[in-house]
Image 1 (cartoon, rainbow, N blue to C red):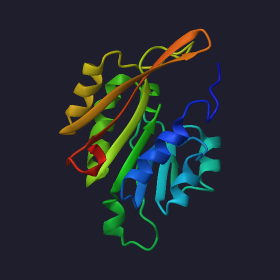
Image 2 (cartoon, rainbow, N blue to C red):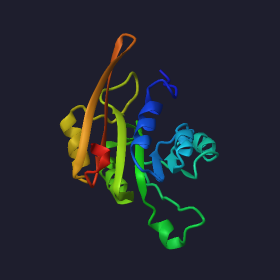
Image 3 (cartoon, rainbow, N blue to C red):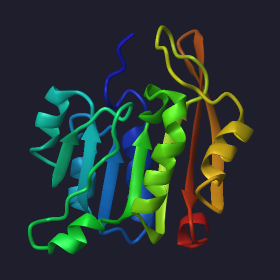
Image 4 (cartoon, rainbow, N blue to C red):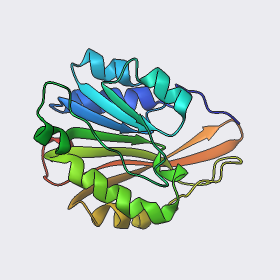
Length: 193
């Protein structure tokens, strides 16, 4: 079954997160066609992203500041600073917010620790990582799931001292869908109040 954008309340989740913090820069893992870009743009947030589907990247490039075609199975993102910044700043690009809506489960589980390390390295000291992942197999998708809260917390705690994980279960027709969502950060700040 194909899941279309807007089928889940992702837009409202991202909107709530970006309005909660003082964000000037965001990065979206698995940005797709750049559907959340209008939210970032409306709030004055410079957003970058990556996706593995070339057609999506072409569309996202029209709305995101920097976007790259990237398969997280093989490589990690290479953030680029806007032309107004010098080379040194470009190599050291950091974000107030990194968003992952159902991206990580599509990447082999053995890559997850390296991706978490990349996220931790590219967040500002007071930045936040926001995620939402499926918690149980969804239809025919062959996803790399975390089935317990302890598994999710263990993955995140390796890089972040502050982790908040929630479980959301909802009915979709005759099927029950369970998802994990939450945040991870290095400094306990307004994000977790």
